[in-house]
Length: 109
Image (tube, rainbow, N blue to C red; front, side, top):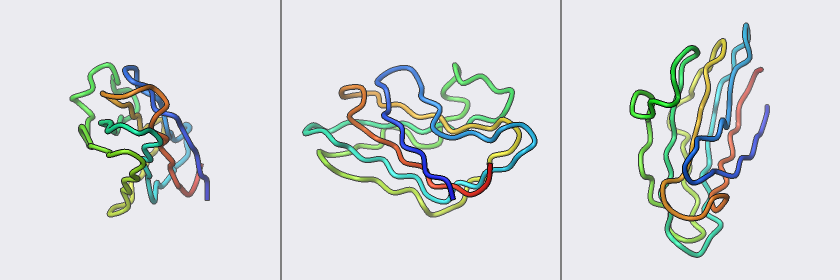
C-alpha cells in the first residue's frame, strides 16, 4: 500500500496520484483535510493519460467540496483504477494554498 500527502494549491492543479506507464494503481481512499480556521472549497479531477488537465471541466469529478475549519472529507465509496499515465489532480478554489492536505491511499505502482 502506498500513501501520499499533498498540500493543495489555490489555483494551479497538483498531481496527487498517477500510474506510471505500463503499471496499474488502485486508489482505495482519498482524504481532504482542512487544516485552517476558515471554510475552503476543494476540487478533484480524474485525468486520463493523454488528456488535457488545462480543461478542468472535462475531468472534474468532485467540485467545490466545502470543508469547514478543521474538517476532513473522506472519499472511499468506490475504488479508482489508474492505468498507464492516468492521474488524479486536485486544487482548492477558495482559501490559502496549503490549507488542505489531500492524502491518497493506493495499491500498486
